[in-house]
Length: 411
Image (cartoon, rainbow, N blue to C red):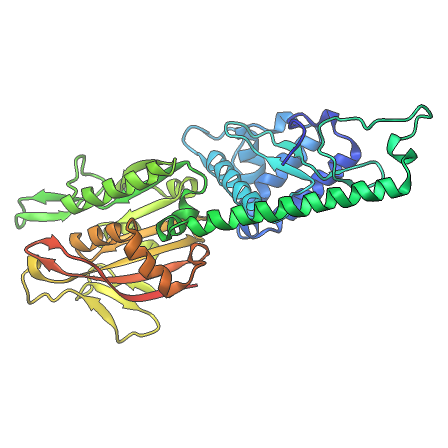
């Protein structure tokens, strides 16, 4: 796409350009990425209208927090990150919106990181004074004119103009065919692992890996227990550490940055700002909470036996055989990747009933062979779906075996 420099200060915009910006804003607010989030709609509309009205003093974190989110004007921005979180959310949604467009818009609206002043970039099809669209890139180029002051092209014979028009159209068709072929080949080369992670890695920002931890207590009975936020140094199992390493390697290979979090001290605003990967089931309260509305979900904490349930088949429960030794009992794990309405963000769950199940789930989603199995079950477009899968995980002498796919669901 060819375009002019962006216009962060719209004093130079013409009335026609301002109308194009408002039309683009209305299109964005009605798009799938924004229609589900009233707060993101309100924030984007406020900053765009403030900029178009030259009300730049309104575009501060404190003023936006008061006008858009109902905070008192004297509220403490250092401890209340609502504006920063939602602005990052708006930037991510804008990126997704423009990434999925099939046709370039007249104008593109951007909200650069670290600023609440929107930028407006007019692309190849820019509005002109007679409301028509021109195919000329908006580079400031002035067409040649004749001595009479008319465009030189107007004095060319009709047959010559038609000839060049035909040549131009033919070249355009060839270029589109070649470009389309290259895009198809690039998409065809994407493996199932890359397709599974595409929604999470799209923006190449920070991605949180949130794991549950344990602690060792002497009383009332010596042993390991779920660690709460009061524990300064929680214990993470070897399988959790292996899972974290596998995922971090994949994330970094695709240009994003992994950030590790302890589940007990992770707060809801973290979910708004970044995609998140949840490890472990029964010592991670976020796994329990966000998986609860899904078709395949974990039995509540305290339930006996602990297991994975299916809402459409209540008679089914995938659970460990508690009559056998832990180190030789098959585990089960849940893999889920879905857009969560509560957090307005992508969530990935890789959680076993025990530690071996968590490791198996992490290995599964970074392995091309395993993910091809999942793709075969769900179809080639599974990168665009919400997904759940249940794995049965053999365990021998405490070691994690090869997982077996036993159930899948997509919507």
